[in-house]
Image (cartoon, rainbow, N blue to C red):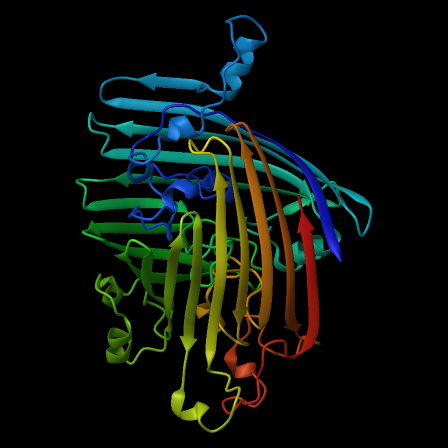
Length: 489
């Protein structure tokens, strides 16, 4: 069992917010809002993340949620504490322009109980955000972080194999046993009216209600995107166009990596006060094909769901996925959620036997319960979640077209061929103090050698599947059965 106990100190200065900016895509930050957003009758489409501040400020003010109780008096040390914890480091406010600049500092320490070694993360960064125009129709944000970290032995081995930190980008060695890595993200957000929002940026996106997502998660590194959100009646419709990077072969330069493109549609419908239904489709295609000149395919600019007819009409070999997201609110402060992801299906071939390799499915089921005071000043959330993906899900005949970015899956971090159960809980006291804990148990089947392909490694070609193209008898956990236990506070 690999466990980690960490004590975290995090300093993020706050202040006035930009109307069209996004809330940080983070479980801790979301917990401040979620109990209010998940009430019956609230029509925010919470499965499309990150949330935009303009749509949640009407329910609960960002500034009221993140206000930290100012220390009385204007003398040291109270004045210094208030400046660090409450005020922007630099702030400009005029009638048609707002700008704020703040530091990002994260120091965390822990112990790997298996190896009895110290663990730590040291992050320093800067975030700049602002609004343009009297009506704040244009907002922007950019963030830079420099990191050094020492991780548990098993994670260190993974980083060395894939040359990236989970959720981050490329790394280099730091003092022999640690790593150094940097990242930057940002976007521009424009809302011409209440119906449309356009965002151009380099960041992450997430679809779902859970701790994980089997459809699109924040597991991989930042990527360039153009996102269009359309809101009409009880419907939210998202068009997302992205560029991803395939670097699994370990190329060290930007010239050596392979680019690929993604186009996604997601339709969220607030069917009843107690139910939201989401329909998803996505497609991945390479920047280069046999002609070496394909680039962005304008056929996939089609903003209307569904892609499958377009793909079929093109005779396309591209990687298409479809999915369903569901959220139910059976009672106050309780939600039940789930996802179903279909990467491939051959009904005719599946009739010839069980466990056909092209039956590529991913599934999720979870429950989330909120405890809070009437004013939401003190709040807790408890989550229990089950995830599963069949062997070879998210993979493709051409590895460059797999469902991944910069050596990391775009959905679940375990890739495919696994089952997982997670319990997560967090508690917030008076906006100022926060504690959380997570327990994970998972079972996955791993390759026993470099020549095998049992379905967990989504970076391998379908052509390497034993018995391809008539591979039957596949099951979740096939291969070298491996059990994972993880707990952190």
